[in-house]
Amino acid sequence: MFRGFQAAAALQQGTGDLSPEAIEVKGFSTVTSRTSGTIAAELDGNFSDIARAGSLHEFLLDLHNQLGDIAGFWWGQTYVVSIASPELFKAHAHVFDRPGTPFMQKVQIGYNTNNPVCPKTDERLIPPRRDTYILLNEFFHVSGELFKFVEALFGSYSLQYANGPEGWRRRQEYSRPFSHERLKKYLPAFQEVNRFSQEKANSWKRDFSLMFSGMESQHIYVDTGESPVEAEVINILAENVEKKWCKGESDPIPVGEDMASFSIRSTLSTLMGDSFLDEKLVQSVIKAYKTVWIELERRLTDSVPPDENDSREKLFSEEWFRLFSSVLALQHLHTTVKEVVEHRQENKLLDQQLLIDVILQYTTDEDMLISDIILFMVASFHTSANLLTWAMYFLATHPDVQSKLHSEIVQVLGQKGAVTDSNFGQLRYLQQVLQETLRCAVVSPWGARVQDVDSVLGGHKVPKNTPVIHALGVVLQNEKLWPLPKRFDPDRFSTENSKDQPTYAFSPFGFAGKRTCPGYKFANRGSTVLIATLIKKFEVSMWSDQVVKPVFGLVTRPHEEILLKVSRRK
Ligand code: HEM
Figure 1 (tube, rainbow, N blue to C red):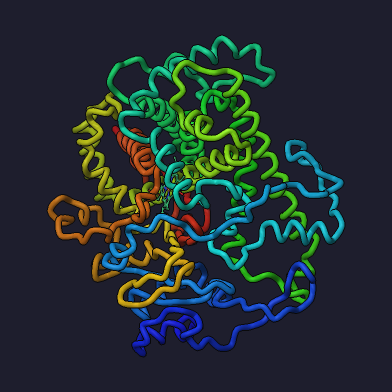
Figure 2: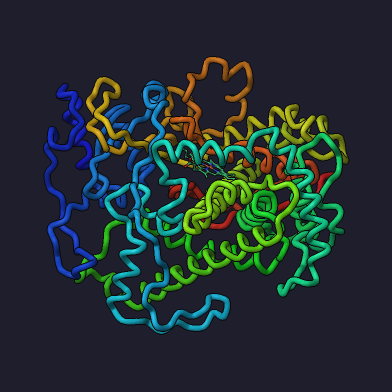
């Protein structure tokens, strides 16, 4: 039995009090303190239960299955409450603040290492002294606080941790580049970026190679008055994937890799400006980002620190090596973003409407700038890439859905047309496919909020400062709301079938405090363009009878690369 179940038993006994003091919690194991290197009597709470379940999402599925829509458990030493019903989501929909207060001090990366080897050279790293290892470990380690593990990547000053009036103000400002009207205004900015790139290309020290290899640069930026340029840029990127697929028709297509490449490029080029026309820079960001992300996800699922005498300790040097590489990769990401910001500042463009400009207008604090840019990059890359990967997987394994989708695409776009602002809304079934993918694959399994006052939730007292997890994925898999929840069926989202869906039953982008995902339209538009482009031209199926299992981290990904077979449609 989960220890969290004991905690939540207090609810069933009718105490109505969710404070940890009101709940009897027994049997916590002791773990090693990394800092001191000695055994300390620290509570690991339900970490080992979470590890046993496989992930926080799977732990929450069991927890709510056994205890109902509201339950408590221990995230390390922090007592947290989790909610999993449209009604409880509604009751929490006004809460803005997010848990995980960061250290309010400057984050230093790299520490006092004597041998910082540039990740570009790939030179073998020499392990430094043990105390440096401990410092690095502390830097990355999941502490008792939710979201702490992502702090190393996003930085203490990022929007992720911004609460109260400042967080609210920042959030409002950063939403500007994602409004429909603003998307339209990207057009002159992009044209300017394009002209600027061509003029300045030769004077840049970097190898300037257009990321859209094989295409003329003037194709990248459209000059029609009405359609949002973002969709046009994404159209070009989608065509790029399409060209690659045309070439490799007899080979298996590594779909995750191609979807990641598309989503990273579309994010960087539409939100971060012309620096990312440099293919080498894009590649180095992808490499560094992957290294850091792998480490962070590992920390989420493997959240109990190793015991001094643990066998993992024997892997000391390997672990150190991996950790140190990720610190260097992180450092490289920070340096790159700093250069991109400087480039943007030095070369002021006429129409400063990109996300990077909005962030630059909001703050001059270097830490905040870099943190927020990295936050948006990371929040966009991984989620969009996995949404696309899962959508392709479901289409490959559901030929009937694929065929219906193909008919719609041909009907709306014709044989040659592209997705535009005006025909976007007609791709209704494609929207259903994306919605059902978000639901069925549980792309983003959970969120969280906190309040600095005592509150009541579902009739239970929640003490102030108790993090409340929004078990988004548990609700998306609730069989009362979604019969046969594991079945992929886009018709659930038809106008007819969805009219009785309770509000908040489908909240894949969060729902609370007007702080839902700011990039949801962006992700939706990009995915629509890419899927329409590819499915119009190709029939996709699985390359082999590969069994695909999901790994539920902060974002849900397949446990291994999915290989697709693509055949050009007649
Ligand atoms: C399939 C795609 C995506 C999914 C499923 C997704 C999901 C989410 C979720 C669940 C949250 C937490 C919301 C909450 O706390 O209530 C979030 C936050 C966020 N997302 Fe997304 N997201 C996606 C794409 C994107 C894209 C494309 C961008 C950027 C262009 C983005 C940027 C962000 C940012 C910056 C936050 C933090 C906002 C804040 O702290 O106020 N996301 N996303």
